[in-house]
Image (cartoon, rainbow, N blue to C red; front, side, top):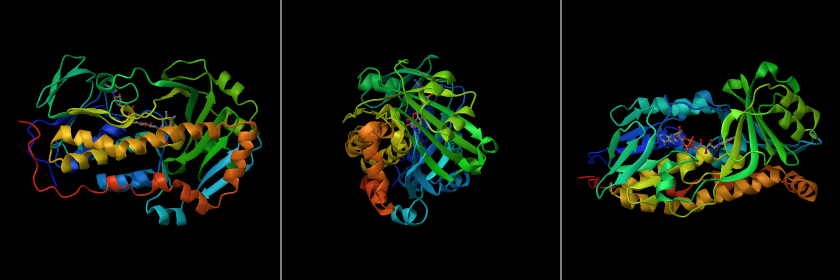
Length: 411
Ligand SMILES: Cc1cc2nc3c(=O)[nH]c(=O)nc-3n(C[C@H](O)[C@H](O)[C@H](O)COP(=O)(O)OP(=O)(O)OC[C@H]3O[C@@H](n4cnc5c(N)ncnc54)[C@H](O)[C@@H]3O)c2cc1C
């Protein structure tokens, strides 16, 4: 099942969750990679991240399940509450029957912990994965049998193939798809982490909670064994064009959430310093490979975070891509043609449905009443059935078929 014959490694641009997962998935098939990251060290910033059963299936393939299980929190419920009245709209149990149905758990984790688990696994395989920081990729040249990647520091890296896992503002996408800037959604996210001792006791639920409001919503959940709570506040604003990770303006936040109930305003009042993201996505595309060059994760299919699946999808991409490399016997151009074909409908569905869920979380008037009625009327079984498409097993992500012998990927 391994593809051991190539001389040059595969170059991966971007040492985020997607890039590391790609390096690990390819290492499992015996493929060497060189991972180039523009930052001076490999690390994640930000706060929490939700993990669906679909990505736990991938963790098993990548051999990182135990590391993740040590760091993740396994909530009891997915809960939606009306952020104006404070009333519970729906509460879906995600232990017990949910776990039995999907075979794998639902969890939440600090981004830094997820990234570190992948990074540690990558560092444990120095013969197969080379990690190089402080290398901002600015371009590449395609040759018949290889790709030459160029960095801002005028370094050149030769690879049998190139994977752009360089996120929303991907340089590699600009070169091979060239569809301009991402779409600014008009939704702004403020994120913060609150030590649990500062969290009001009556709100310390062991659950993922969405306080859905009118053009606003707030998400809360515990992390790091319950030491911390992740808080994510989202609201509509046209003040910003683009940008991320700058400090947010709490005055605007409090204005936007002025109509929400006391628990929501109390939670927002606990945080002095928020990090701000201007949320962007793109409409789905069908093809994101050219010859020996392909994309993965946000570079291929950036999505709004409302289904909490961007990183989950990036990790699924990685496993699928490595399977396709094996199935193609190490012929990267063939593998990179096959891989988006089996991914674009799934990732496109998540991109589109994430927008729909954004509308749902921010509904007002009749739409809000309808949302509360529809979700409130569901049984846990109904709710689980509606998640089957997302959390259920995907045929294209099963282990690759046995390939007798690998073609040379590069001369
Ligand atoms: C508020 C918010 C909440 C979210 N919550 C969830 C959630 O609960 N669950 C979930 O699954 N997803 C969630 N997401 C989405 C998730 O964060 C992204 O989909 C995921 O991080 C994408 O990973 P990636 O590796 O593709 O890209 P990125 O994480 O963006 O990583 C790209 C990497 O490439 C590097 N890079 C970029 N350009 C270059 C270059 N030219 N040269 C070298 N290196 C380069 C960057 O420095 C970075 O390290 C959320 C997103 C947001 C904004």
